[in-house]
Length: 115
Image (cartoon, rainbow, N blue to C red):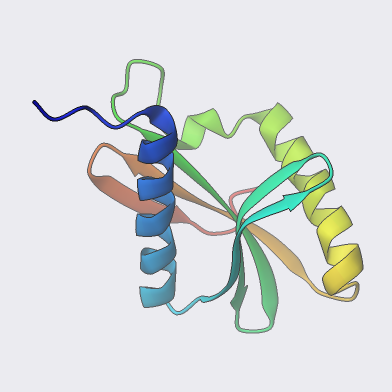
């Protein structure tokens, strides 16, 4: 009997799928799972000259809403702060954009400039 993947494994699989999707979409993926004080950035990319912080959200069912809806105001505020701290170190003059890759079941969608 095969064991079902745990949430951590599902999350990693979703992030790997999202990263490959971003590459195919023309993004240059600089880093994944960047740990900084206060949290973690799922992916840091370049889209042309723009530094893009990408949040990856996965939902296997709609029981608790869509993957995109899981990036609520509190999460957005936290990501803004974490990204500002990260950019201050690596690229203080960079223009930053926030994108979301939403995985709803097997459907994957990219939301540019999501917040």
